[in-house]
Image (tube, rainbow over all chains, first blue to last red; front, side, top):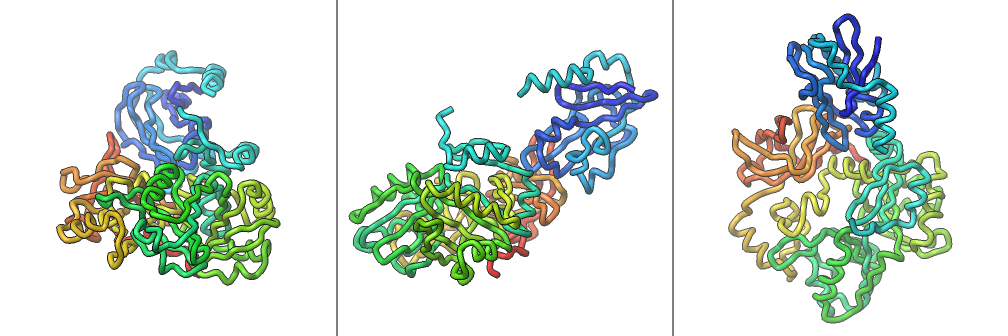
Length: 124
Length: 362
């Protein structure tokens, strides 16, 4: 199971046609204390890089984009009351939503872990 | 960008891995461990803030004959020695040039504590209004650390003796700390029991390290300070109040003494008679969403104003904010919608402070 990354600091993990999506640890650290996650509605259909969700920290409000096209089939409802999970485990328990993937080939527009790490290093 | 000013603790903040950012022309620590953790520490223990960026002026002379009595919206003459008072420096239109605190050091000596970004202008304005006496800008040689939180009194008593424990709210004491003259004032910007300590800038690092050696004390940055002050409804100069707003519009008329003369009084009297055209209100969001500076305030589909300050309140568990609206909406319970791009949240006008559980007056 491969994980891919976007320039907007989303990650996506695909397994049997369903992708879990979240923000990277780097993004969560940059945002600081996360206070609110605006989860997408179940059934919402998004194109790759469309607006998927919103995330707010004490410092800023940010848009989260869909790393792949697809339909939202599950959201992480635990984040409604405890959005700080994203700070604690951004690339694990802090996942935001599951997408039913429309086109697996779209991963060509994303980065691998090593590419993403190099990308983040270049931002410093 | 113009060169940023540095406080005497700048290197120390960097050593402590603080996240630094410009504020009011100064390079300041925004956070150390994290804004919410620092906020919580201040509400429960004692947090130490580097506030050396703020400005201090020393006035020497006759407070009446010099014209100082007419410079601010409050009376300086009637402040007893050892006490301080909060109020405004206004322009002739009643607009707020700054909000500040005057400390009565002696019959013929006061210290004026002003915001960082307004130091140069305040100094010029006050100096220009004085007919006598001497005004000295002692900002660069004066350091200021704020220790705030329910345990701050015990910490200072342990460090400097029991006299500090007796200080009531808005009273200060001249003391010798670390071998130098210092002013310890029971004031702050957090809604908690707390102290502002003024001392020579050269001694700030020593005091910072001494206080942090107490395990009940942790450093806090301007990020936490902003959440703390907004939870108790204090205005931030440059965001909530400025030269385009008057104390009456800001709901701060309590800090204006109409029984004396001051520059801006005629404009305020006129505004008091005719009514204000906008009013600062406080509102609570119906979710964890944060209202933010410049977000639009709407009511029944129409734009009625904009947000001047907003944040997620850890104590209330929801977004809180302030902003100016049409006066008829300045009633408790008025429903507002806060909007910005694809963000929208419902909010309700409430009374200040948002958070009432602080240790401020214990």
